[in-house]
Length: 521
Image (cartoon, rainbow, N blue to C red; front, side):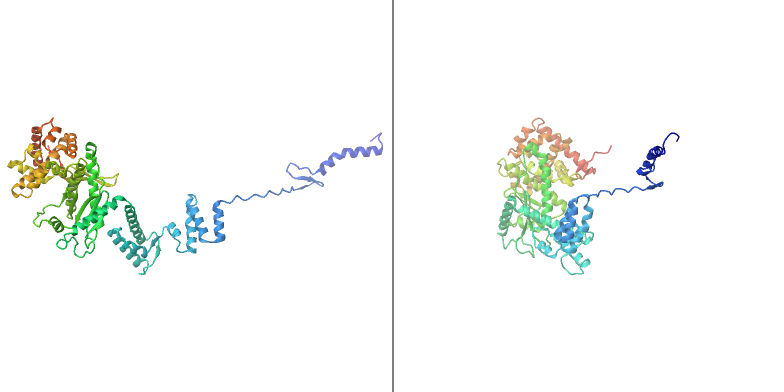
């Protein structure tokens, strides 16, 4: 450079070159992210070391599992299994844990129960077979289930064992084991009920009374020792079921008390609101004898010549219902008829009546026949039969038709004044048998007329009259006080017309299952 000293030129050249050198030596990143280094080379960047991630906190399930793994005790594994079983999202893991419990303790009941296993325990069965509160049917079924288990699962060796829930033998055993325990629990609950205490006291007194006829009259059947009767309670009923070597006393008591309770479920809904009648608290005594011969023996305790022609009877003086086993349909009809006497008597006692002896006979027997003649319908909602009273009684129709033809029916006025005490005086007189039979038939017919005929047009007045009967008002004057608007003459005319219509319908086959079918056009 002209005019500059060599020293100055060197300094200037060095100043111009410094920026380029600084760039080359600075190590700044190029566009690719690498750092430039001297000589045109690039250096790869070293990544920074990541921060360590903390492990998630342990759940109670983790802690419980770890505790069980360390201790390996039944208590800890069982606690872990119960935690899993109680959690909807983890329940599926519980069976494997329960199995670990069984590996440590093979007889652990909680683990077997959780896995659905069924315990076969011969010692438990012995206590059940000796327990009088367990029904005979249940005992028999348990014994058969035991035999199947011994033969098919235990090689004939009677020992305590857990059975898989899928085994048919286990299912059958479990079903009857549950029924036995339910019966024992029910008996235990009854034992603390004052009703049961009073019923058993009454039952013992009745058995002592029936034993007073020994040795001439003994209600112990052949092969029976000890008590002649088994006591069965079903509030408000006390049933004395005659014992027999065939057993089944508990089953008979349960079946017959169910019928009587069905009667109450029919009787009170129809009459309670209009009459104020309510179910008695009991105990209401019922004697169930094994057959007609035993019933004849009962009837002739005090009179060897007493005629025996019925399927049972009600005793107003003792409030007992006495019946015997026969055909199922006859048994139910008898229980409904005689049981109605018992309920009417209970309703009348609230009014202080004299055991119904002054009651009009047509009403006493008619209302019993009305409820005794019944049909039944299955109630799907309640899962039980409902009984419908007031069906047509073909036998009573035959009597009414024949007596009307012969002209020997009671007039309505005479019928209303014929009392139960008159029936007691007449019933054993052969010459008055038609009169007594007409009293029954006309009683049923009049109740049917007033409660059901022509779509029940008289039913509200009939229930008013029933209320008066329950209050001790009976006879012609009481009847006319309720039915004064229609009058006796008009009612008698309708009654006779009903006999003709029902008689023709029966002849034409239009009475089916106690119901009147319309005449074909």
